[in-house]
Image 1 (cartoon, rainbow, N blue to C red):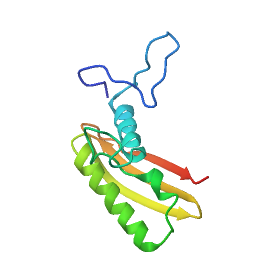
Image 2 (image 1 turned 180 degrees about the vertical axis):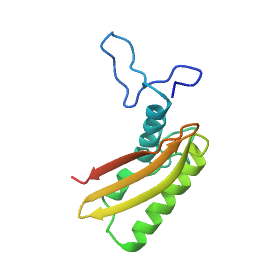
Image 3 (image 1 turned 30 degrees about the vertical axis):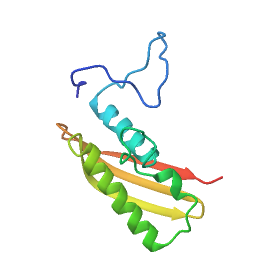
Amino acid sequence: MTLSAGRHLAFPFRIDGDGRTAAPRNDSDHVRDEILQLLLTNPGERLFLPGFGGGVRRLVFEPTSDVLKGVTKARITEALKRWLGHRAAIEALEVVFEGETVDVLVKFRPAGSPDSRVLRFQRKGR
């Protein structure tokens, strides 16, 4: 899968070996980067997009419960559909709390791609 029109920046932002800003290799990598940005951004963090974000970073400080797990899964699902629904089809989402660790597993299929990809994100409290 080749990159769509326009130049994209890799996430996290970095400089490539040739001294230029790094870019994702293909659309699938770019969609993965967008999902990571969404998960790591807290709602209200972006001034002109206050509703943008999955809020996963805040979860490590919350008391774990089945209710929180359900709310988190619903919040992430809603954010993925709202902000990236046109870029990826979400096939599965798992949220696991273990002590101060939040583990999020997203199985998605980038738009226009026949292949599914899995993104596992883990966040630990201090």
